Structures are given as C-alpha cells and as structure tokens.
Image (tube, helix red, strand yellow):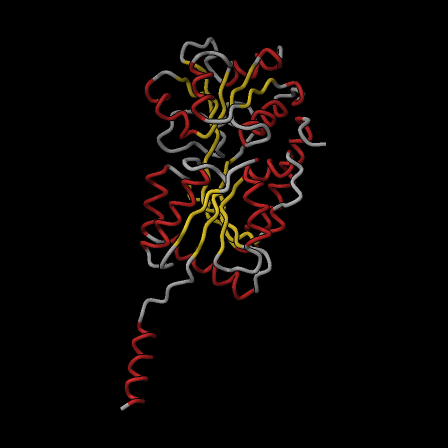
Length: 314
C-alpha cells in the first residue's frame, strides 16, 4: 500500500506542468523606459504562457545600463535563473563610459525586438525633405542641431552615420543630448533644435497629428503604415536599428544555456509574445544562439568605429 501511494505521488508530480526555474530579470534602467517595458513584458508572457511559474523584475538604473550590467555579472555568476535585458544603447554606453564590464561578461541568449530610428522636424520648418536637411548639414554642420537621447546612444550614432554617409566630418555634428524622450520632444516641437532623431514610436502621435514632419526612417525597407522613405531611398546610405536583447549570467554550463535558450524559443513563438509585439509596435527581430553572438560582435565593432569617428571613443 505504501509503495502504491509513493508511486501515485510520483506520477502526480510528473504530471504537473514542467515550469522552468523561477526567473529574476534585471532591467538596467528606471521604470517606464524601453528596457523596463521589455523586462515587464517578458515577465507577463513567461508567466501567462506557463514557461515560468514566477518571474520578478528588478530595476538597477544608471550609466546607460552599465551599472546594472556590472552588478549582474558579479552577483549572478553561475545562476541560471538570473537574466538581464539590454540592447544597442548599452553597446555604446560600455564604450563611452569605458566600462570595465562588457557584454563578454554575460551570456547572450537572444535578440528580441527592434525599433528603427526616425528623423523629424517641426511642421513649420523650412526643411521639407531629407535632402534639404543633408544640404543644410553639408553647408554648415554646426548650424544644424540634432536633438536626441544620451550621448553615444543609438540616436547619436544615427546622426554620426548620416553625417559620414553625406561626406560630412562626424566630429563637426551639433548633437544635443537629452536625458528623456519628453525633454527631447519638447525641444524639437519648440524649434530649439533643427531636427530630432529617436525611435519612430517616440514621434508617432505627433507625426500623425501633424505637429512633426517625418523625413525618413532608418529601416532597410519601408515600414508598413508609416508614410516616409527609408534613409537609403532618400539618398543617405544608412540603416540602423535600436534592438533589445536578453542575456543570462556568466559561468553557466552548456546544458543551462540550452535550457534558458529553449525557454525563449517557446516565448518567441507564443501567442502572448506575438500579441505584445503588435501592441508595443516592436519589430520581431528574434535571433538566438551562435547567430546572435556573431551579429553582436559585428554590432560592437561597427559601433566602436562610428563612436571613434564622432570623437566619443579614442
């Protein structure tokens, strides 16, 4: 009887949903930003899809994500239940802040999403097209001011690439960095800068209401539902994407990495995540494993090159 009870108990245990271990996700930024939104969207989807029974999000803001990255790499080493979100902005921040901790100190799992940059001007601006803006930039680089996010971030890199592709010395660009999207938007709408650069979602409502004029987007092909040419179409050979990723702790075994990766493969194909992408307006740029690691190395190399061109990295 005793053996029958134990066998029944074991069978019931085996029949329970096979949850992954509970995850803790570090969002290396303040609540409300893109990385925080990504972490909390992952939290919801992982739980709703029963991939993980319990997911916690912790915010560790500062220095373009490098403070959270440093804390994560040291405190979570060897822990397969710890994750961190990050992205292209972090690549630039590591270089410009000369961070001793880099993405080599974590275990990249997957690129999750992407957003393309948009170049805008106030509706009342005399600049009507991207060609007009480039012409003004060529005439007097310092007279054209660009409003965007943190120095060395995706927006700044985009402006440097635009200058370089236009035959203008990137060190001559007049880039005005703002700490938040709201501040940058107010400066653009108020005509305090010539043009603005940020993810399209930051400008979407103002573009649709007619208070901002969208000149171009940084995608490799036109974006569905967005009435604007790509930078390439407009004559400026630049493509750039602000992507976001998830990474695991350093010091994991191959089996542990495979297990975490398998959970994100499930997440990516889930109905909850696909609906999240639509709701948030995030492009599905999922890439995992060796393919993502190879792309990450290319992105780091290209970013270091343009930041040297701009003069932010020696």
